[in-house]
Structures are given as structure tokens and as C-alpha cells.
Image 1: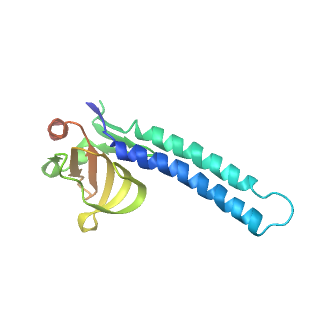
Image 2: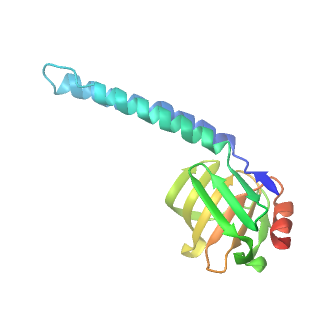
Image 3: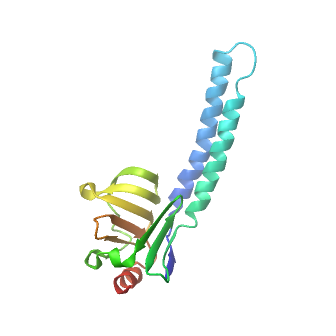
Length: 172
């Protein structure tokens, strides 16, 4: 079974806004520095290089959000992919009693991003959940499935049909 993690449109709007704002701030800062402090030669080229890198990396990250997905492969593993983050979990390590399907109105309680991407409408990577629990998240807006493994790591995975995904995880 394979499914795509739905990504909310606010994530693309915020990501696009950041792609525009950061380079403009860098160029503005370089221009201010050039005309306010420097005498002689141009020092704006590092800002132009930095802006180019930000745009390339930003476009790659926005594009990678589109391919966020999870699948139960034929080898008894759950593979979760979201942007730069990936986790592979043996299905035998999932605590079956902890599998819960949540509807679109029940948002996951993530209060600290430790290593990940957090935009309105999209979260991927490692977070601290309620009670300080270490949680791996690949979630857009909408329904999701949450579970934990026998070692206590929590997972939140977006799914268009959370009930079907929860049944598949419980049966696997």
C-alpha cells in the first residue's frame, strides 16, 4: 500500500514568500553595506551568490514537498518520505494498540521543531510532541495517522484516507 501525504496550499504560499523575501533582504543589506560603509570596489557579489543558492535550495525544497509519501513495502517495512527526511520502520516494531486515525480537525500537537521543516500546512522531520515525546512527522493539512514504535518513538503521517491507512498498518 502506498499513499501521498497531502500538502496544504498555505505551505506553498509561505515557501514562495520566503523565496522572495530572503533574497530581497540579502540584496538590500548588501546594497546598504555597499553605499553606507564601503569605499571603492563592489562587494555585492557575495549577496548575489547567496541569493542564487537560496533560490535553488528553496525551489528544491518546495518541489520535494510535492513528493511526500509513505508506503508499506513488500519486505514488511513502512517507508515514510517527506522533503529531506526519510524513516524506515519494520512493521513488527509498531505498537498496534497505539495506531490512531485522526480526522482533518484533529491537528497533531507539535510544540518544538528539533530538526525539520515547519511551514503552515506542512511539517516534515523531527519534532517534540505533547509531553516532550520525540516525534517523526510528515504531515500536511488534513487527516493523519499517529502511532508509536516499541522503543517509544512517535510518528505522525498525513493520509487522505486515515482510516484505511490505520487498518492497513494494524493488519500488516
